[in-house]
Length: 234
Image (cartoon, rainbow, N blue to C red):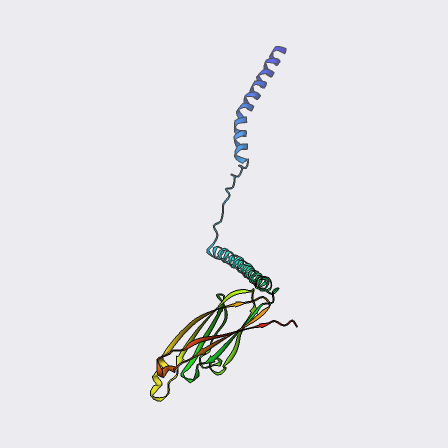
């Protein structure tokens, strides 16, 4: 009896094990189907900029470029202004030191118009030691109506200096001689003078005509009258 009971128990145990082994694969499969699957890794996407965004970016770049250009232009303008002031300062120092302020030598240049009614002076230029010290273009103006003009005055170091004048003249004609107004003359002349230490040199430049246009023998000429004076201390 005891032996039969043990056999029965063993049989039941074996049946249970086989039942579990049969049911386990189905349960595993069912659990696998019911378990939520993991989401795939989302791919990172980059949106392409629109045409409006590209245009706005280009406009911002253009505005920034224009601002930088204005800044550069302002810097260049300021630099030019500084250079101009420096040149003016150097010129003043040159006149005070190099050109003889310490010695007290000076020159005065006068323009004298004695052309008469045969000529009209349209322009006049004066150069002292190669530097333009007077220039005036005034057809029918003061160059004709005013007979004496002081065109320049400055200090100079003692020694030899040169003066050059350029005139543009036009003939004056009346009635049957009206064609003379179509004639234009360019007159050039130079003069060398020497100034002493402590002296004032006055040079009178005289535009003169000998014979006039109707004669055609002698054209306009330039004469020079120079005199020296002692500079008086104030």
